[in-house]
Image 1: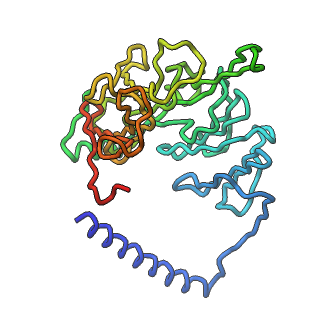
Image 2: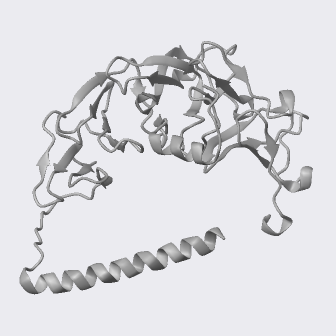
Image 3: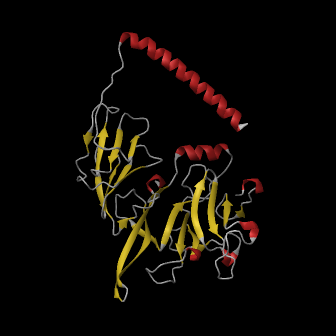
Length: 158
Length: 172
């Protein structure tokens, strides 16, 4: 049943894609899509969009810097608040599309609450365990989850 | 807002002084937590951990209490530092940021030792256990219990646990 539903939705998605491509082809007669190329010296270790926005962020592990683009990758800038060589890990908040975290070499780390527009540093008493993939673990509480529970007829204990 | 609740894994190292084998250094992990996404300084949750997570770390695990946390940790009666045997690692849970904690016995009592992994997969909480045959000797990989050196325990509420049984066809 579930498999069937997935394959239907997948078929629908490819149909939408086809439609989108057709539309794009029609539009491209009027104006060519804009392509801009930015060259980077190193491969990023992490590279993601803040969901549903035009902001892209990436981590250059060789230079220890964070680079940010607010226009879907057309123009890139370095996050100035974080000293070069300090950025060891870039972590996306899995349930909040405006938050991201940058872990530093020592006990200073950085957080943004506004998709990278501004960064605040915080201090830890100890070094982050950078060799642990799950160095940060998050809480999934959100409105979507509650709605799903209510639909399933479940109630929270608290 | 619990979206701002984050657990943070840190490492501490301490020089154990010079001995006949040279200078020693022992390291262990400590887990910290924040309730405001690091707007204020984080607080120590538990020492001697290897991993911690919220029961509700995935949206599908909705039955669990909001503040329920599971940690894989070593017995706190052991002194800080030193090398722990993986067979001594246990699962603990808490609903008040480890002011009080409960030993999770997985329904098998004191034998619930050797926890090597913890995770939430879809609506299941899963724990991998390295099986100890109790003889103190290293059990051979294909010894008793059908030659399965690892056990998987599964829970949908974080309270009742079941040993997962796999069909023989997928065993190596």
